Image 1: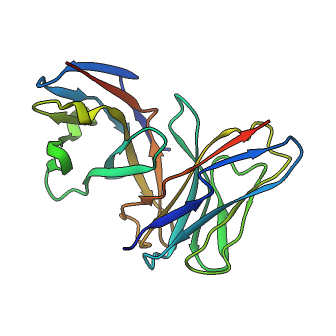
Image 2: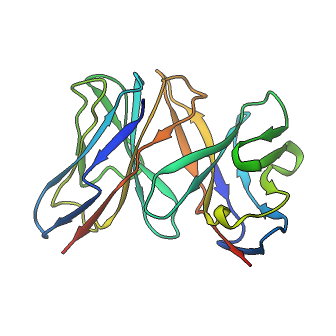
Length: 116
Length: 113
């Protein structure tokens, strides 16, 4: 069974500082990995996706993530935090279903707070 | 614009009542999913459907039922058998292959009074 661990349920950074949100996964097959963002009382929006094409994945809003197989990690970073980045972030690993579609296994989320 | 709609945004239910949450997509996606979100627990899969007239149980299907009579619609019924139904419910869809991105609706917050 696949699993995802997000270290730190709450992360606080100053505006302009580096954002680092940690994600470690376990998977018996080459994984497909996702980062989603959720603003209060809204659905999830895809930030970026890793599908084995390149280990460094660039996403929306200046975020990027690096796949490190040796560390089974897929940490999310952004060089300079903005107030609008305050939200909850979820890492997920994908497992394909026979017949189509896929199952996403989510981490428990990291709430990012950005302070002035 | 293509997307996923969920209604209502907020729903209140008395104990012992069944309630149905709506999910509609106009993305022409084959696969659809229902998730439950509780604080500090991430999202958990309730049911999924890969094609019309077919659906499968996810990790926490007890107390829930679904139907998939049309490609664009995947309603979820929360039955009185669900012990703790108060939660945020999210519907998602994907084109239907194993590496797909899932696209999410805005969610329905269900509160049992």
